[in-house]
Image (cartoon, rainbow, N blue to C red; front, side, top):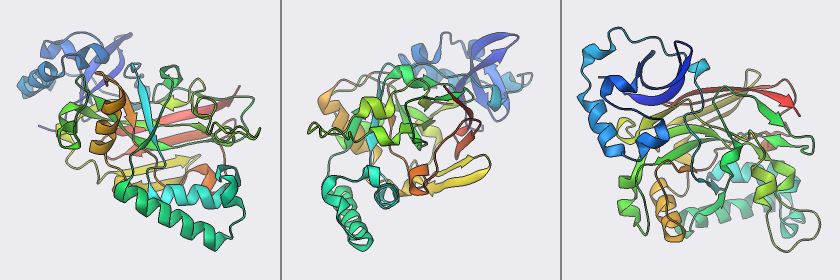
Length: 318
């Protein structure tokens, strides 16, 4: 049987939780399940068993699933992001946008800057812990909802990423155990107010992730949750994003420096991960800041990760 995912869509005029196989949507009640996806994640092993037991004939009269009408799967309890986790992405940020450079980097020539960035990234992949921060769940919207560009933001940028959905309570796990706590994967877009991340008022505290990341609508999520066992290799997925039809991101999760196992383990040493939590695992090269291009009123963002579906988010100025 082809892969089965979970999503929310409208059937017969009512928002419903559905199982998705190809272009068909089946209410979860057909598998003896009930509740929204967040509730289902609280008993994830039972959900997987119900999906596995679903007979092929159950799909016979299933209505069509329109990905462009998909709703937000659910609102996560917690959202974590891993920053600077794709080699080409970080080098592109440093080279393309001066506002993303620390003061000691400003004086470097382009050649020195690139060599510095490459050394830092190689060392990070080899031995560093993840650089993780929190993004507010109130920034989450659906895969077809409108991204509102705040009036105070000059450089709203996109970051299409592989989202990891947690399926069991998780505390003090090793990297070797970590994947046992992953329910599945989803598409996320970590929209960023690029110029607000590093404050210009001389603050010694560091990056301002609240201002840079957590505006309302700054996390399109979905269209579906694909169970982990139905994705062969999460480090071999193409990630492709376009704005108004022009492709900017066209990369692979193979460029990820610190893998999912290390990210989950690291976070579990600090906090308790809960079912439904989402980890945004980092963005590959191709953000607007690498090109000096930023989101503006009327733009349409389309983002696809192989096997996980497509988002289509129009942008509107606040």
